[in-house]
Length: 305
Image 1 (cartoon, one colour):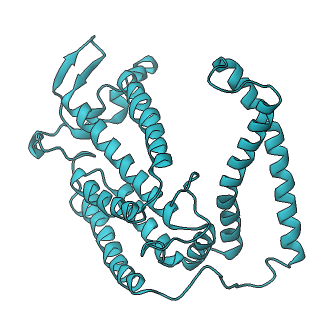
Image 2 (image 1 turned 90 degrees about the horizontal axis):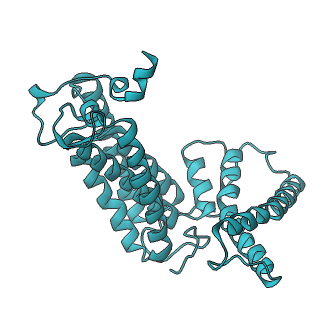
Image 3 (image 1 turned 180 degrees about the vertical axis):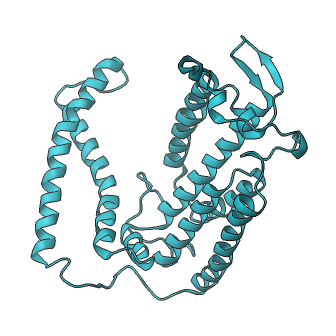
């Protein structure tokens, strides 16, 4: 599949593509909930295996995926951690429960073993979330997305709105490219040869016709839906939804077991036997853990004391 915008409008031919929209949405919600519920690397890594296998099995165009991953790595992995280092160098103490300085720069700025572990675990958690989202987007068309949301009892009017917004993203990107190409044909320099300030200025000018054309399209779609009496009935059928495949039946049964494990894990780790701190680390014994308040590690909070 050679998909420049990642979002698919035509179902693929792989077993993952042939799953029903309800199965895809349920699995997406379960994996998302499981990743949110834990900071344990022993659970996060196995959760990454299944979406990664699904992505590989769909044989996607890896170029836009690598671009998205690089953008996430730069904004979250580099810029985010630099900000974390300056604002909370003791984040490792709060979330891991110990303090082992590796490099000391000033009295307030230093890198600890626990801070590095905290950064590593949180970044793995973001990668796991990224793989789940990408696997879902690659496997699901907007129509299947709407049908899947309706399967989990979301009102179909909201499902259609979400589907239309989801479907509009590639259209907006194509119109942006068309407007930019037309401006370049008129002599406006927007390539890498132009200064960055000039490129940003011209890109801002593109947003005006892009927004106006998008409003015109929204009005046209709304009028068409009104003419077809959209929302008159309480229920509706879905063209994209089909009979369950054998893999659907297996995954739905596995999903029930997975949901039970998630509920058990949340109850056990949050109520029955809560861990003293947020993140488990192999080099920190439970009896040596120091519990601190997150606001105590933000040195700028001292200004308000």
